[in-house]
Amino acid sequence: MTAGRIAQAGSPQEIYTSPSSPTVAAFVCAAVLVPAVISGQHARSELGELTVPTGSEQGNTCVLIRPEQIRLAATDVGDGALGQITAVRYFGHDATVHLRLDRSTCSSPHGSQEHGYRTSAPECD
Image 1 (cartoon, rainbow, N blue to C red):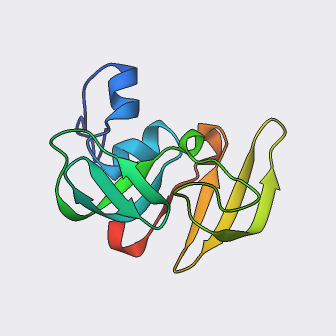
Image 2 (cartoon, rainbow, N blue to C red):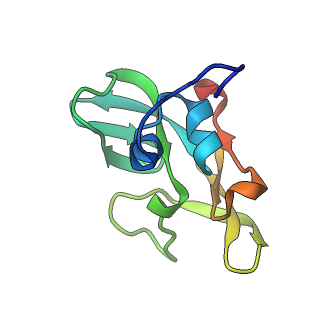
């Protein structure tokens, strides 16, 4: 619900994997919104090239990435992005990792909903 109205109806899996808005995405679980350019079924972003569903909005937009979709590596591996870890917060079985990339700062929140983490780039709000 958003402002007392149903924002999206569907199965839990559908709402998690295909939220109708950034608000719905953040309500369900942690979400990282990244500016990207979509052409066909590929989105280019600071995190590398991502595959997007058929019918995705084309051009300049934002893509939603769930924390479990982000992998950190010690060196440049594949089509990823180079960055520096600036902070790590541990919450027992999970952690939030803050990264500084070439042109922005993103968070990779690995945590439960109760922590309420949501990170977005200004262009995505």
